[in-house]
Length: 147
Image (tube, helix red, strand yellow):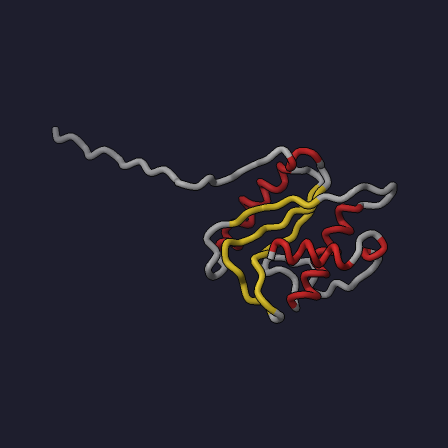
């Protein structure tokens, strides 16, 4: 009986997922998916492909990454994604993490002409009370930092 050829094992030079302590410091947070390549938008190019929010901390980010990976990695030129966490201080009776997400999406839309490629939220969204909680300059600075 002839022996079968052994299977080849390959390892990756880069990590698949990296989780840091900052992901576990807050449960209610906003996260930004950033691609390796800049994507075209009506008013410029940005590496941001998704802005999301969670009440479940890092667990939600990991599941969102796995769920959205085929869509995000299917975009032209995108080979890998990094997820960054953005938090803000709390205020009584206000879901500040949701206000922060809305503010970031609206700031992105203002700067680049449309929401990030994989965001469904934000296409018809208008400013409400987000600027009562955050300055427009700070929101835009965060978007520019990750773009």
